[in-house]
Each structure stands twice: as C-alpha cells, then as structure tokens.
Image (tube, rainbow, N blue to C red; front, side, top):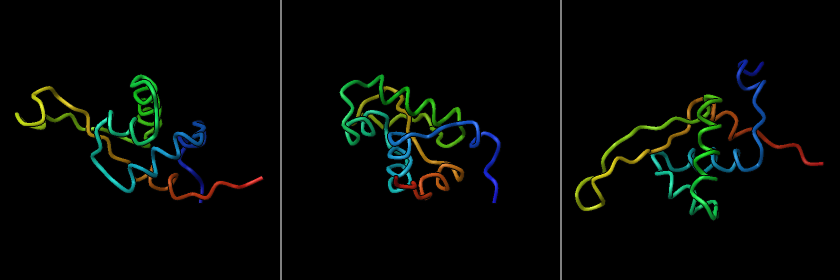
Length: 95
C-alpha cells in the first residue's frame, strides 16, 4: 500500500507521532491539555506542532465554546484524521 502524496513529503518525528497517538486515544482534546500531557514548557511549542500536523492532513480541530463554567472564550478541540490514525499506528523501525 502506498502512502498518500502529502504523507510522503512530510516527515513526522517522535513528537508528532506522540501527539497522533495521544489524539487517537482521546479525541477532542484542547491545545493546552495536549501541551501539559506531552510536557511542553511553552504553549507555542504545542501550537506549532499541532499546526504542522494539521497542514500535513493528520490532525484537525473544531472551534467551540465550552460554556460559562469553563470559560466563555473559544477553544480548539483537536482530533486525529483517518490518515493520522494510520501514521499513529505505524511501527517505528528501531536501529
């Protein structure tokens, strides 16, 4: 089976693969929660990583408001795409 064209041109490193596996296990996760679970010190690190995965077609987000108890500002909830699920499940060769 050949990979889609955009997957062949995009290199997914260990951090990207970790995000995809995280989103595959728990969909609709806010950006700041992804950063905390991955141990990122700065929010911009998480935002850039998620943006790269989105441009590659491996993740997407939905903007929503969580309600008055959790805050009224819009929040991006991230989910892995079908292509991202394939990449997340692929074995990394050791060596």
